[in-house]
Image (cartoon, rainbow, N blue to C red; front, top):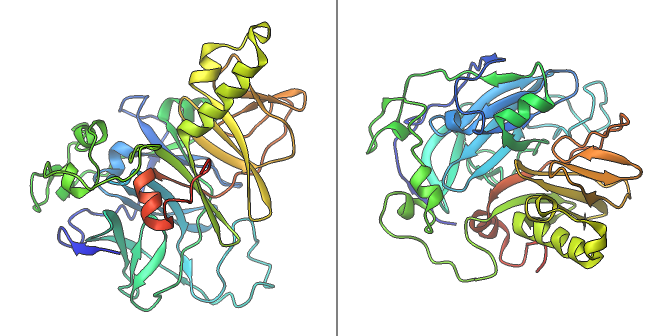
Length: 357
């Protein structure tokens, strides 16, 4: 792991007192990290805001969370901020003490100014430990070797969020100054519509050097692009990255195999897809829609694409590929995932840790 200092600590300021509104002044097609925990309205954290802050320390439904974003890796991960004592599992009630001691420490995270393999390094203000964002693992300090708990989240557009979560809140830009606004390590006033990573996302290169226009890291494979979007899933010590192209391609193959009499549409085969994988002992269904990817515990149904690229048929009803909700009132259980570029997943887990290898 290559760890290096890039900018001063907190030159990219975290958001520690987030505010939310039902309105959003940006482009409705802007992407956002979305959480939808039981007991609280859904929340969206637009990436156009996170470019300048990278971390939001928040609390939702009584759970301290860190919404984290690394623009270089396109890595969107939501973590539980509780460590020490019992490692909280999503869905376990606070009254359940079977997991061990409830004496736990809630961390508050900031941007260290370091990169580990081109990925954001967080630091916690309580112990000064450092954490690799894409892994959630402490790489230096008191908690070295410990890992944060990943929580269920997704990345979709603000417009789709509004359709699926009426009454949900969208993060309000706090303003201020950030290193991401300037041309060097100095902080500058934030202009949220400036799109500081637009050229990087559109280019072929990857990593800090590509962002700064100084070249690119090498990529030794041609079956996946280094900036292919991957949904990373871990369970029982097994890690599997599911590339978007392989979900869409697998579904296209199935549609094509049915023949023209089945009237498969172009939208269903080119914009959406579904695959089922088993990680550890858990079957997981992964949906790809035009607005993002999502993973849920598989109920054992055979899902197929429809004429609506946002929806899938299964067990006699239609399912929303972003939320896992069916038209007859059922809900699939969302699986904790990491959304990131292929090169970042490979940095963390190796070249064989992809679906379809």
